[in-house]
Amino acid sequence: MSKVGPRPRFIVAACSVALLGGCSGDYWLGGLTNGASGGSGASSGGASTVPSLTLDADVVLTGSDSFEPSAEPCVIDGRGHSIRSVEPWNGHVWLHDCRLVGLGTEATPSLDLTMDEGAWTRVERCTFDGSGRVRVNNAADSTTTFSENTLMSNALLAEPPLRDDAEPVFLAEGWDGTGSKVFRGNKILKGFVEFGKATHWLIGGDTAADSNVLVGRRAGIVLWGSDFTVRGNYVHDVFVTSADQPLGNQESALSVVYETTGVLVEHNVLRKGHWVVRGIAGEFRYNAVLDPGSSGWLQQPFEDTKVHHNLFLTYAHSGEEQGLAPGAAPIEAGLSLVNFRKTGIEVYGNTFDGGGPERHFVGPAVSVDSTCFLDSLRSNVFMRFPFEVADGSQAAVRPPYGDGISPLSDRLGYADYNLFYAPDAKPPRNYALGVSGLSMRTDAGFGLHDASPMGPLDEQVDPRFRQTPPLQLPYDEDDVVSGKLAVWQVLSTLRDLYSPGAQSPLVDAGDPADGAGADIGAIGSGTPDPGDRFGGTQP
Image 1 (cartoon, helix red, strand yellow):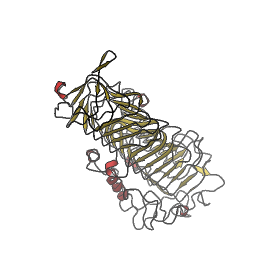
Image 2 (cartoon, helix red, strand yellow; image 1 turned 120 degrees about the vertical axis):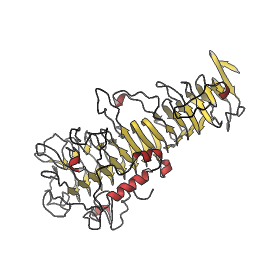
Image 3 (cartoon, rainbow, N blue to C red; image 1 turned 90 degrees about the vertical axis):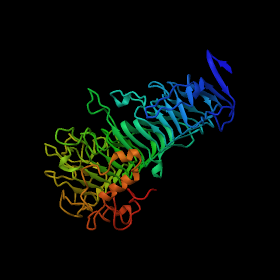
Image 4 (cartoon, rainbow, N blue to C red; image 1 turned 60 degrees about the vertical axis):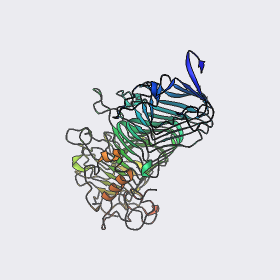
C-alpha cells in the first residue's frame, strides 16, 4: 500500500484481485473495498444486492491505468463517487454486465473519462441506477463503445425549467478525435444525449438490437460536430413543465447545432417536441416524425440538406395536448425554413399528414421565410390539413404563419409533381409562394404535373391509400420500451398504413428526374424504385 496525498490509494497489481481481470499494467484505484465491508447496496430496481465493489473515494485513472471489474454479480455501490480519468490517460475502462448504484451525483458524472492516444472505453449491458450522468471525451485515436445499457428514470439529473440550462444524461466530446465511436442498443429513460464538439459517432445501427430507445422526460438526441450516423432509433421527448412553462420550453427529439456537418439520419421514429427536429444537416430520410408541438415537425434544414421519403404525421394523446382541438395550443408550422438558409435545400418524396379537423393545425405544411430559399419541392403528399386561419390566408406552401401572402413571393426554385388533399380547408389553397418566371399550374416546374397533371388551380386529389390512415397512434409505445416491439416493426406498421392502393394517383407519378418508378409520397408501389426504402427490410 502506498499513500498519495492526504488519503490512502491502492496500487493493485495486474490480476491480483478477483474483482479485476483481463488486465495489463497496474491499477491506481482510490478507496476500493470489496463486498464484505460494503453497505447493502439496495437498488431502486427491486431486489437488494450486496455490492461486489464499494467506493469510499473516486476511482482515478491516469497514465496507463485500466479498470475492469469482473466479479459476478458485478454490483458497484458508488456512494456518490465517480470513475474518472486524469490527463494524460492512455489506458482503458471495460464495464460490462454491472449494476451501478449511486455512482456520481447530480453535480458530478458517474463516469468522466478523457481519453488520449491508444485509450478506449467499453460500457456494455450495464444498468445505471440512481446514478449521475456519463461523460466521455475522445482525443486522438481513442475509441468508445457504449452499448446495451439502461439509464434509469431515477438518474441524478436536474430538471431546470429551460432546456438550454439542462445537462445531458450522456455527453460525448472530442472535436479532433479520429477513432470510431458507437452508441447503440441503449435504453434512456430520462434526459437527452448529446454528441457535442464530437465526431465519428454511429448512433444506433442496422439491426433491432442496435436501436437506442429514448423515452422519458427531456429525452432527445443533440448533435454538434461532424460525421454522425443516426439510424434505427426511437425517441419520445416528454416535456418538462413548470409553473412558468406549462408546456415546457424549447424541447425537441432531435437537435442539430449550427456548423454541424456530415449527418445522415435514417430509419428513426422521432416523437414530440416543440420542434420534433430542430436543425438538420446532410440527409434526412426514411424517418417517421410524429406529434409536433406548436413549432412543428422540422425547423431549419441547413444548406445542401436533402429531406426525403419521410412520414410527417400528427397524433395526440392525453397529457400531451398540443395539436388536439379544442382548447389546445395550435400547431403553427410543419417543415419550416428560417434564418438565412438559401442554398441546396431539397424536400422531396415525403408524406405530410395534418390529421384533419381533429387537429388544431393552423400553419402550413411547408413554410419559407423572407431570408430563405427552397431549391426543390417535389413528389410530396400534403393531406388533411385543416388550415384554421381566420384571415383566409391558409395554404399548404406559404410564408410562415402570421406573415402575409400577397403579393406572391418567389422563394421556390422548383415545385412540381406534388399532391394536395385538404377536403376540410375552406377554401383549400396549394401554393402561396412562387417560382421566379413561371406561372402556377401552367409551366413545368411550377405545379404543371401536380396531381392531376395539367388540372385546375388548387386541385385536391384523394391519395387513395389502401386504407384510411388512423388518427391515433397505431402501436403501443410500452411495447417499444419493453423491447417487445422493434423500431423496424413500428416503421413497417406505418408503411402499411400509408401504402398506395391499386388505383392510387401516387403510383409511378413522381418526378421522372428521380428515376423510373419514382412515386409521390414516402411509400411507393408499382414499378420498383430504389428510393422506396421507408419501413422496408433493414439495411
